[in-house]
Amino acid sequence: MSQTFALAIHGGAGTIRRSDLTPEIEQATHAGLLRALEAGSAILRDGGSALDAVTAAVCALEDEPLFNAGRGAVFTSAGRQEMDAAVMNGADRRAGAVAGLFGPRNPIRAARAVMEGSPHVMMIGEAAARIAQEAGLPFEEASYFFTQKRWDALQETLALRARGETSSDAAVRHGTVGAVACDLNGNLAAATSTGGMTGKAPGRVGDTPVIGAGTLADDICAVSGTGHGEVFIRYGAAAEIAARMRHLGESLDAAADHVVHRVLAPNDGSGGLVAVDRHGNVALPFNSEGMYRGYVRSGKAPVTAIY
Image 1 (cartoon, rainbow, N blue to C red):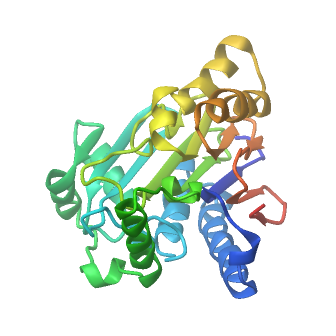
Image 2 (cartoon, one colour; image 1 turned 60 degrees about the vertical axis):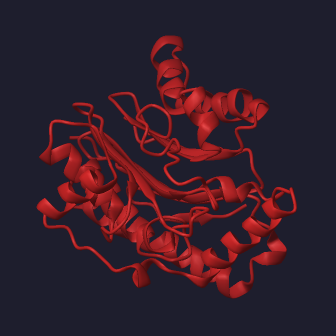
């Protein structure tokens, strides 16, 4: 057993304007990130698994309406909420993912139910909801997931489209939450959850539940992304980091930085990611104006940041 654990989280990236971030919202955002770090690190400090830690951290972020996942999920162009999530255990590469899901309070737990209660990796829509029901997970009514901020954002997006315009705010493309961890045994895990893009087409699935794109954990590293999902998928963003470390011998920092700034950024892949390796090193690169993020290591105070 090693003596080091590490946990890193994100709450989405994009055009986070300082003028829009009131002191109250900024304080609430840091508080939400800290709650997620504590939820995950409490498990790691007690010798718990990386898988349990990332699940707990993402649940805390899904419960916070400030972030685009679970309770704070954005709306599709049809005025509905369709949520995606994935979890992966690095030690044995087990993975579970859900897409187009609505109902379970915590989509990340539904993804884990797919991993642990079925022979499959990804399930969608009603079939995914049935697995969550069979696992005894709590469900909520539509009112639980409704936030006025997300509804107003949809109306703004639809109004722009009606005028033939698009938003200049990259954040509408990649609000996501995620966590990666290395536990005291050196095992790695990743978890990611999202409501997707504001005004997305019904049925659209981004990179979050796609293993190797927005979520990955193996024996080298664990990665959770937040960005322009289509680009993360096309370039296999998370898998590319692991491949560079495995085959080129790059450090976590070097591999993550290369993918975010030299692969994704030149190809309209705005966003960022959090990653951890088996030695407890963390990387949190992003190419947008900001990324809600935080990390904590054994014996150290947690750190949260936005810009």
